[in-house]
Length: 295
Image (cartoon, rainbow, N blue to C red):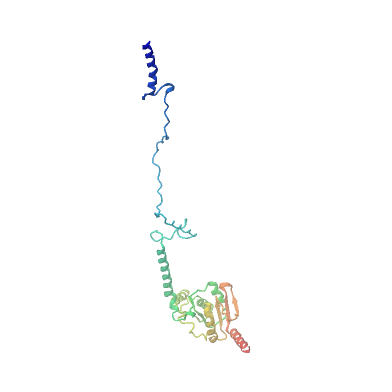
């Protein structure tokens, strides 16, 4: 009996010892020890199909910490060089011109304009006071036709004060106004006038003289053509009143004489011309002088 009781007691204790003893085998049954799930699990990363394209970032200047943001570029006005859709100013090599190149271009243009003035126009003005200088402005075809229409049917010596390229003198000769003379100081315009006369077949029949219109004697002139600036009209009116005969007629183009009353006029706008008969002009001048004396 004692041996049987001992064996039974040992059989009861063996499972308890096996349960408490550490073992590498997983327990079975209801006494199995549960394992805690892992603290963090990541999903598997799929394999990369290939290298992704990398876009190069634009180069930007590095800015130090605390430095202010650089100002944005100003908006371009329409039509400026460099605007999208517009071609920038470019040099001979195709590279865009910078500020220095544009400045050099402007200076070169100014020098070229000054050279043209010094060579072509200044020689005619060196001996004339600045207030009496008149720039060269050729008369248009309609202006010339209107001026000669106001001289139609007349005769006698015809002069063009500041004849320029000589076209008015040639047209006056064609109309029968002879002798026809042009006074001009610019040697280049005189050469052009002589060439026009030679080309038209009137070489030696018309005259182009290099004389100052303020110094020529107009006492024998019966027809005077004046296409000059308004600034010289007042002193020129004094000269014409003092020298021209009563039978003379003055035709002014572009600008009228401010103190004279025209006998007739023709055209409109820039083509308008005015005719003044010296006899009527003197009569009006004498009347105004007598009226001022009475007052």
